[in-house]
Image (cartoon, rainbow, N blue to C red):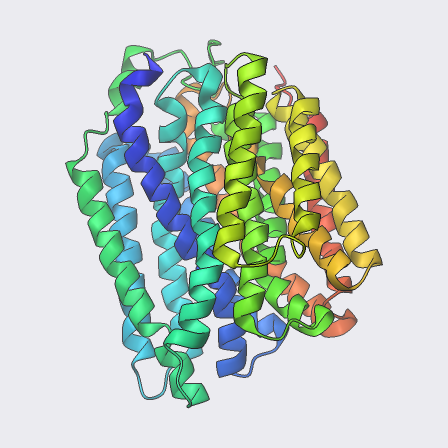
Length: 467
């Protein structure tokens, strides 16, 4: 099974990762928008993420129970068809957004229901697309491939705050704060529905191989590992997968709660009152994740070190140039980010291309950044929290590939369990909203520190395979 055979399907899937990253990150713009339109508290506004990410848990739990009792659904319908089903489900959710935004009396609960349905569609994408990217190539470079695809996912999350903040708060908004706010999301979500349908058609027409046949050809060899699988009845019997489930929970919870509350933090604690400007700063948080994922993909590749380090530096410079040009800041305004970018590059070299070591080291750095963010004020504090994105970068893909090693025939089932724990994005943001309502927005960022402490442990110890 040669990796070069799958260049075209991997390219198609990478476009899919970009699009769902873009739409997911629009939720960060919906939070301040709904907070203003419906006059919500911090806790109520963070129900946006609760509705969206709860779908990951509910649908993945259903998937796991079905696969455990009736057989793996993806093994029956195929990864390609599962991806198409996810895209069409998300299309319906975007159309509900369009319809409700045009109502004379738009309802916040209906928007939340639409977000749940949107998350349902994305759950199908996560369960099917992540392991598919891992399987389309040699096992040794599975982390590299998934980091590359996740890098394009982050490109979507980088662009989304800039475009979303302008479109929602400026271009489609009018003088009526209630009707204007509702209509501000009407046309954008109609456009997204059209794009999702186009993606579904593209996936349908593309020549994505049926990996079910690949798995049948090598039934006792894991597609993620070269080792022979141990006979187990359920994916839950693997400790490194169980610990990985909680790692996904805390990673997504930490990343999402920071992104969700950054605009509010900038307005209330830093004095950046204009949403469009705050959206441009937010692009550095998600853009950092994009740069780190592309650099991480190269770091964990099989290139020789001289080429690898050169390419890593080039990609980091190009990524920074993209964000810099999109945001329109002066170089003096963003110099702190350049310093953190260099630190990220050095950290990758220190990790020596070992996924577990990279995960543990990056989590430790994020703990230090969050402590500094809480201790300081103003722009210094802001750049500390924005730099967390750089070190978030490889966490999801590294946890995912570390957790599904040696699962063999339980790989898809294990994938559904990991996707289930994206529930962290539903639980942690409302908890931070409660903290913000009681102890202040600034101090509430102590909560993500707990998340990264667990991730540090998983990287250094918890991911070890126990026979």
